[in-house]
Length: 257
Ligand SMILES: [Ca+2]
Ligand SMILES: [Ca+2]
Image (cartoon, rainbow, N blue to C red; front, top):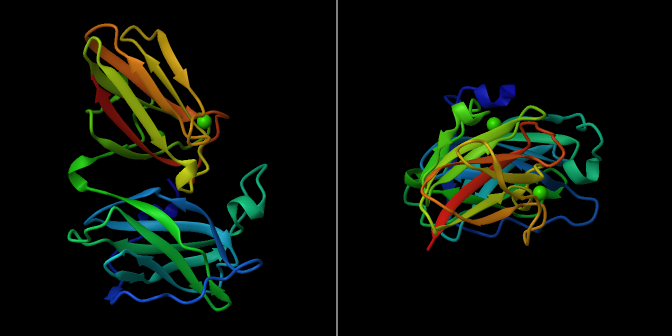
């Protein structure tokens, strides 16, 4: 975990102001959001949102807008940052803004549109999904093998991170014969660097099915009909064995008859 996850929330102020247009978005060479962590915000919790992008070092505010209102978060940190190995600034940004936000329980929305206001203009709006607390399971970082698999129920969502390199997150699923598992990853489509790959194993560790890319680009959707009742293991990793705090994901499993 990077240090920005551990920064105290106590000094953070945020202000809810009426909905209004947030000014013209810059285009071309202006400021831009490239990568966001985490890829989802749990409603009603105080969340640190880290944004990588271009020309964000003179940011003055981070704005989270929904159809019902706007939350202007105070910035905790802004600075130039190094490029991850093998990646270029236009894809992953060379500057960082960290903000603290609490989306109220009565938000009545399924996503927020984040943008960064800077002295030289405002970035594009970047969608971040909102997750209801009751549907949410946190990935604590210790679910790295079958023995430590995190139990995951149908209809639940996990917000987690593949970090460091070669990290594998493993989840235990109770499957019923002839029911279909649908496991869906939202990562790259939501501003993560993760090229997710899902692998399903039986209780003995035998590989049953692997899904790398899908209709959502690099984000996999795995569909598999359970042959028998039992415990199954679902593993998520990066297809290139990379992993950083910017390799966040949302994993959701559902059951179809
Ligand atoms: Ca992890
Ligand atoms: Ca993939």
